Length: 467
Image (cartoon, rainbow, N blue to C red; front, side):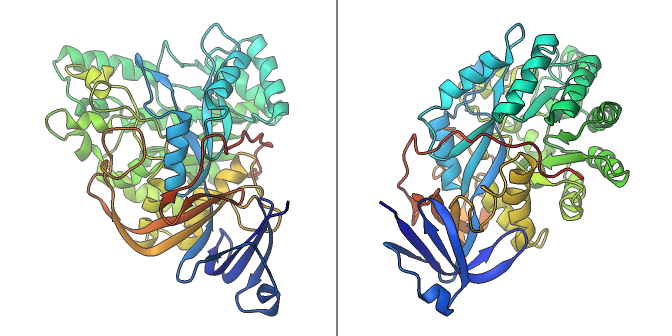
């Protein structure tokens, strides 16, 4: 049986257009758009009509950086694929790209199989995977080719976390050379982990154990240095590069310079770097531990460079790096030693709303909001135009968004499986009202109407954003 839904009277916003239009959905896909009130739109019949008068009709968000159930620091991220994707839907995100992890001594395939098993049948929205490459060797390099063919087309490496995920420059170069051949995209956590470990050791020896020292040892200059080094290695390899969670103005400057030279170098930032700062890390009574993530929060003056980078397209994507750990029992592992605080913040539910607040505040335009949160992540990671836009043929991943609604962010009301909000008490304008995933209502007028297992695994093509 064919099923049809029509969304009427809304302002349809994509990365390129804003138009008062009705949207016709059939069997989970968008089949037509027509200007509201025109004979074409008026002629449509459907089993279901959604009235979006006074609302925005936007593509579902694409969050290209999440860590559900990630093992880290002797514990696990507190959101499962079920709780995390449900929270994502509440926040207007309809696709996540999570990270499968290769453990040292194991194959990429084992890591990918393990993450497929975690996610299978659990997700409320569609999902895909990047692959974390922790052990570069000849077998790993061959496996990268196979994964690209299967639709896992991006590989993350770490210049940080020696002894855990760390790759040295030689391993990074080999992986980049391979991706230059097979069309994969290398994603880089750019921090000089070897130098940071020295600074951590010295800080602890001085008795500097509080969470704020996490920000002080992970210096902006060491993010900039690693970003510069990653860019030069990518240049040598002839490979594109995507730098994740850019937090420091010095790192933005490195990316800007590379892009001015015409290199295929891209940058992502996250809401925590746009809205939070080292002031949060310095909160008393160990409250600062809630804000420990890497790269770390920076002093407020870095925010202007990040917003400017988003406006000039030197930063192309805003993802969350959603990796939640509860304050009680998890963040507390680092009492008396900041280096033992699990690194990560919750945010998958907050991203679309915070970026709408940025529109209200005048940092970005409405279309740029959709570009950095929906369209570009879909293009960057080979999901476009199936995801990230509202156009005939696209999946009907659509959010009815109320731009006038006001809300206060709080752990009391969020749906992430974590006992605090990084944005507790923050007032924002704009709220998700209804969310469709492939035409199925997941959120209906602020009620969850989805289910675990609706979300399907989505293979990806290679990067569609190259110069």
